[in-house]
Length: 78
Image (cartoon, rainbow, N blue to C red; front, side):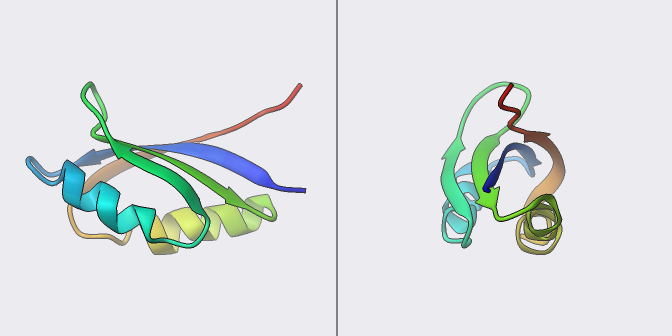
């Protein structure tokens, strides 16, 4: 089973492209794009389970310089 999520990220002013490029290199990230709107970067990530997904977000994504806030939205298949 694979758990997927979208991570919406706010960054410091002018850092969106730099943050997206850095996150794109993280293992488990399948997509990272800088966008316009209330969030600056949208990331799609996947892991083997919810615990690993949480560890990915906290230790690999939120620790990057330039990130001010994240919102993780798990993908639900009904």
